[in-house]
Amino acid sequence: MASGTPTPSSEFEMNICFVGAGYVGGPTAAVMAKFCPTIKFTVVDLDRRRIDGWNSDILPIYEPGLQELVEAMRGKNLFFSTDVGKGIDAADIVMVAVNTPNKPFGAGYDLAAYESVSRSIAQHSNSSKIIVEKSTVPVRTAERMRQIFDSNKKRPDIQLEILSNPEFLAEGTAVKNLENPDRVLVGGLETKEGQEAVRVLVEVYRKWVPANRIITTNLWSSELGKLAANAMLAQRVSSMNSMSALCEVSGANVEELKRILGSDPRIGSQFLNASVGFGGSCLEKDLCGLVYLCESYHLDEVADYWRSVLKINDYQKARFSRNVVSKMFDNVKGKNIAIYGFAFKKDTGDIRLSPAIDICRQLLKEGARLFIYDPKASHVEMIAEFPAAQGFPQERISLERNAYTCATETHAICILTDWTEFKNLDYERIYRSMQKPAFIFDGRNLLDAPQLKAIGFHVVSIGKQ
Ligand code: UGA
Image (cartoon, rainbow, N blue to C red; front, side):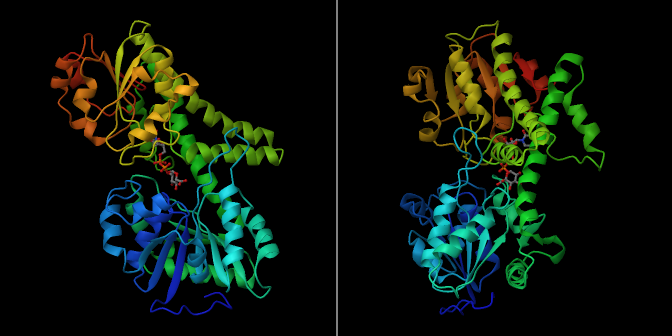
């Protein structure tokens, strides 16, 4: 425990408070609670609806295995509360896991929530604590946090030692990633107090993570490490997506390229799936953050390099919708198009920055009528992506509750999310219910194209002629 940290009064050995009950805070606290029965975890958030959700039978987010886990731990050593002040004050370690989105107009991260949590921590801390950056933040955020602490904390003897411990979980596999992480990264200041705080947090993780998977480093490398990891992942998808365009005109096949590249251990086989483009709240956001960071240090060439990864992503989304229109005889006006999948990837209901948003908007602009089905995405959130006030034609958007009715009477199906459910549908039945010629645009190379062709579909895949 950090020097000066009081011993918690309850039966627990330690109190850890997560601030922010979102995609990181909720699942992380639940998994930690499972492996650390002697530690009390409290997840706090000002949003009452969210907290009520975590305390109910229907969690506010969908992740395989999460509902069962939360139900097993809740009330034992896992608690959800809106009392942010109390949660912070009682904690030995405060994990800051609030959202850090991009600003709407591109200039870096919106750190308003982060700053406000930092102020709350200073205001509500009556004892010394370790403060952990869990959210992805620009490099040197800890320095700003320190300034806020130093000028707002209640007493000079209260020590708030900041660590960086970015989360590497991917949505859809959160529980698996947290239970068996590839690595845990802990960055601290290279001072005696900083190193002691690192030791305390590492000890918590050691309850279930092998020592060789825990990387300790300095604060700034840890902050930048998370950003850089997401940028490299995004770069792989954009590299494959750029190759997919070349494959389509040259007769090469992007799946074959994946096989060839993936068998080189220096390249590795993961994250080489060509697609409609990457989405989600992380890769694009962190690329934008990285570009902004480079620009702010006047590293224009470096900024341009990473900006090009984003450009290929936009190109891939635009290329997909252009392809739909051109293959359907250059005209989708008045035609019915089924959209299979709206979430940014399978096994999540999250639609933030999903490529489906841009693709659907483009098809609507071209005059298509859309029938959208996603197994987990919320209808309220999906329709909010097409505001009437911005001129999106509400009468041409239908949200569907099953894949079969969704495709009935349509001219085409676009596969935009890699949900396993879409692989196992009865495509003969679907074909019979559609208008002819019936097209399938497989934006995830998910389906068995020869089989669909045998049924009668016109199949258009990514990166294949
Ligand atoms: C990403 C990182 O993978 C996590 O390690 C990181 O912790 C997280 O961001 C974060 O910063 O919080 P996530 O955005 O949840 O995780 O999902 P990914 O699995 O990275 O997928 C991102 C997008 O890339 C999805 O739209 C996915 O469909 C797409 N993708 C992924 C491809 O198009 N091709 C691939 O080969 C892989």
